[in-house]
Length: 361
Ligand SMILES: Nc1nc2c(ncn2[C@@H]2O[C@H](COP(=O)(O)OP(=O)(O)OP(=O)(O)O)[C@@H](O)[C@H]2O)c(=O)[nH]1
Image 1: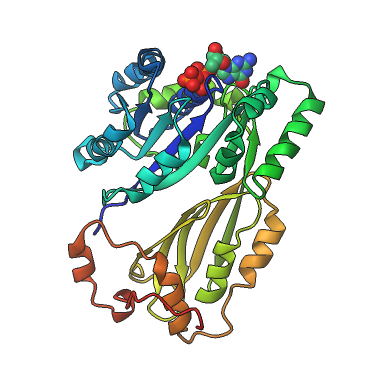
Image 2: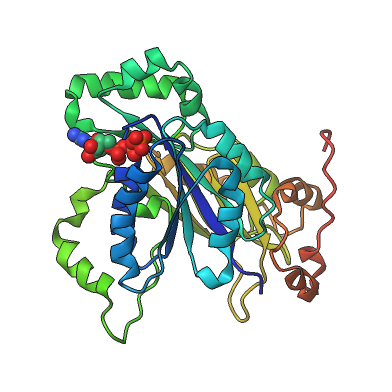
């Protein structure tokens, strides 16, 4: 079976907005997930690398293999290659862009990467609530950064009045309509927005993380900026056309979708999306398990009822295979990292023709 691709999350934002603070928060609350960190810093490598590695060293001593590296953009692909190497055992990679890095360049580099072991995990733009107006005045490109972000984190909420915050969030929403927006302080966003916690072993020795969790558990709830998650399941197949329309005109506030979908007879696919990035992968029906679609949708400012209603409308009328519809959505099919996995598949529906469908379809 092909190895799961490792999500690469990009964290961008202007100087001092709180990227390192958020990264440290994610590292301190990663719940057993092995995080690879790339600090893509042009100016203050040492300061940032030191701040982050203080955290990382602690975790390395826990035996969880967290890595921290400082590179410039040209070294990024090589670094991602090293971190995604199976031996590194990394579950998620977080790239902190320097305060002066152009997030679009990073994004381009990431999407263009030919590394078969990684996938795009989202671009989070951190904004300093107290400096927003000044930043925008000095760097009008901030508007573009917000527009291309998959998630906007308005940080340092403690430094502004509620009125100023409301004005600021309205401005951000104007620049980046539909993009999920989290208001927080000290970068305290829930790590589950970016990566899934590791399932816990029921038996065995308590790990250092377990002990830390007991330590933190009572007060951890309010540490995290709120997000919503919606679960959708159905035993009836989904229409590939309607699902594609849902994904391409995603509900406001939707950041991430994960799960698997039944798109008709012998057509089960894993589905991952982050922002506008959609990825399907071939997936076989688990033996003895009924066909069904199961999706978890995560975002900030999501209208759960509307999301459920729109997904319910994606349910197909019957169980006939909509081949043209399937072809359309399969433009997002990801080739497996391990070509042998594709060869293993004997199901013709799992070997689809990947010709680009014509616009008239
Ligand atoms: N009051 C307040 N201070 C914060 C908050 N978040 C971060 N800071 C402080 O702001 C300063 C800058 O935070 P960093 O996390 O280093 O910011 P950065 O975006 O990584 O900075 P560069 O790497 O220079 O671009 C630090 O002194 C933080 O302690 C917050 O929510 N509220």
